[in-house]
Structures are given as C-alpha cells and as structure tokens.
Amino acid sequence: MNSKNIAKSLKAKLDDWCKNIDNEGIVKIIKENAIITGGALVSLLNGEKPNDYDVYFKDKESVLKIAKYYAEKWNKAHEDKNIVQITDKEGRVQCFIQSAGAVMEDDEDGISDSSEPETEPFTEETEEEQKQEIPKYRPRYFSTNAISLSNDIQIVIRFYGDVDRIHENYDFVHCTCSYDYKNDKVNLPAKALEAIINKELIYCGSKYPLCSIIRTRKFLNRGYTINAGQYLKMALQLNELDLKDLNVFKDQLTGVDSAYFSQAIEMIAKKQKEDSNFKIDNTYLFEIINRIF
Image (cartoon, rainbow, N blue to C red; front, side):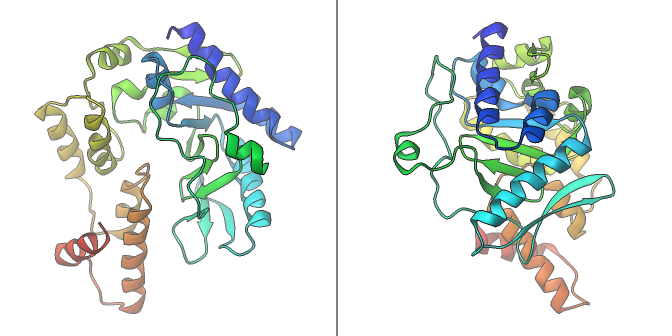
C-alpha cells in the first residue's frame, strides 16, 4: 500500500473513532493532536490489516483529558470492577487501579489477531456488535501505560510529544513510520522502509531494553530476522540497569502487553509490603516467573 492509501485508511479509522465519541471537546483533541505510529503502518505497507492502532498525543494536557474521559466511561459501565483513577505526577500520566496493576473486561471480543489482507478501511462493526448494540470504541483494558479500546484502538498515555520525541522511546527502526491526523500526512523514513523490506530487526537504542528483548519474540514469529549484534546492543543497555529495584523493573516492562507481568509485579510488591527486610534476588524472581508463565 502506498503512502496516499495508508493516509486514507488511517484517516478513515480515526474519523470512525471520532464519530463514536459523545464529547466534542475530546473529538477536537483527537483531531488536533493524534499521531499513529508503530506496527499499524508496517501492516498497511505490507497490505495487511493492522492488529491494532497505537495512538499517541502531542502534549500532556491532551493525554490527561483523553485518559480521564475513558476512565469515567469505564467507571460508569463497570461498577462491579475496580475503579480506574488517572494520576498526573512528575510529568507522567498514569492509570491507577486500586489493588491491581490492570483491569479488563471479562470477554475477549474486539481483540483482533487477524493478519489477513484487507483493502477497505477497517472501521465496520462486527455482526455481534451490531446484533447486541455493543458500543464501538469502548474502554476494555487499562494498564499503567495504556488504554485499550474495542475496535483495535490503543491509547498510549506513557509518552507524548512530537513524533521525534515519541520515537526516542522506540526500539526498532522498522516501527518508526507515522501518521499525523491533523495534517493528514504519512511519514515513511528511508531506514524504516529498508528494514521492513528486508524484514530485519535493527535496534536503534531505547530506554527500555528489557521490553525490547521480550518484543523480539513477536517479530521473529512474523518472519523477521535479527543478528547477534542487535542482541548485544540491547544487553549492553540492560546491563546498566538495576532490575532488582522494583520501580526499575516495573518501568522496564513498559510496552510489554502482558497481564502476566503485572501479576508478577503485584506479587513482588505484596512480598515487600509484608516483609520490610525482603530483598529481591534471582531465586525469588525465578520462582515467581515459573509459577506464572
């Protein structure tokens, strides 16, 4: 798919999202500040349907308002579940869930694993949603760093800023294509296109090397290759970090979309709370990991 058709498809997706929002202020924020980057553009370049669309925003104020809007939607619709609160501390917006690292709907509808090519914009309701009148783009999953909506929209609240600033937190070159909703413009860096064509993982450095190492599994399953030098670069950055510090450990798992990691973090935090003398070591971590995975 060429850049013109990619822009058309992504605009159609975001237009459809906006049509299903009942707050004009939120719609305006999205139209002015939304950026899509990451795997969705890679999929479209390959003529495939994206699994999801990672949406970022250009400033913290936009992130905060969007997050509060969907937290309120969740809390009204799920009074039987944990309340979601949005916090703004030290320049970082986070979802806070009492006594839990994440909260989600019980069912799994709306989560797509499809990679079948599709030529039309991916905005139609499923038959099940039409039959049951299930709201489109409803909040389905909250973690510390992101809010996942039905119909494959993921709002990333951990980072914000222009594309260059967002990509400071990205690890692999092929994920750095982007789309700006306001300007209706797609950016396809030459290095990213080369990596996509060759299906090669090139590590460009990240603040989250642990997350990057784990993420390689996903790309290898999709046919990408990676040389030993890229693993060495990730290992060198990881070696600079103290993963026995729970805060560092939690932060390093940013972007790893697995509830299992949240469960592990909760168990460690509980152990520390119960025993003030407890220190994390590999024996304990291995036990926790083997128990969960």
